[in-house]
Image (cartoon, rainbow, N blue to C red):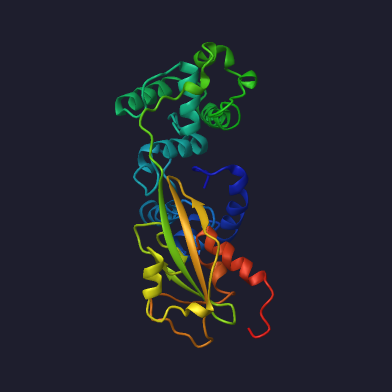
Length: 316
């Protein structure tokens, strides 16, 4: 959950998740809908699907116990080299290096490492340096402290912008600070280009508040989540058979939803359907008692929640 997400955001999600799925066996036995429902709103949903698959393999291949070596952990879904090392160094004291974004920033600044991390060769060199700096004595107590300390240093002090160098315990040894250019590190020449995508969403709503939702296909945006039927443009939405009647439809303000490397512009057309409506399109009706338990994109959950909190029309 903490991958690419701040602790303050994760806390409430983690508490709900472990309250409902307290063990790896419980997670393995859960349905994907249940897992995505608990994750709904946290974003980066591939993490939830990988976590679910990982739990199933831990139960089926390892008797419900996580491997204690990073090399073995990397064979499980969704666990890469750095995540595997974080788990085994923190939980089992294994002497292995991590290289997440925070640690990468700390190391390149302290070492003055100016290799271009867009290059596989430079990335390998930094991994080698990270391994050379690991504690060599008192491995069991030292490794969890070292790993946690490195992560916290990057998360709270050695920030991407305006690092708090005066609070840093290794400031005296930091080469980037010595030359007055900590924000120059890490060096990465190739950056991912942001793109934009517009989608038109058809919000069909019955008088009792039920919403028509379809499960999004994989791969793609919001894969595996439930959402309003989506269309590439307004014309495609209007051509949907029996989907809506113009005189009973409302266009909501366009919402910009920011994904990792994409800006998603959502155009929602809300149509109040008849109580006995049976739309001839993929999906099904979910009542206000049902949809909160589904995996829903954050904007869709927000729209539905707001609709439930609004007073009902006299004729509805």
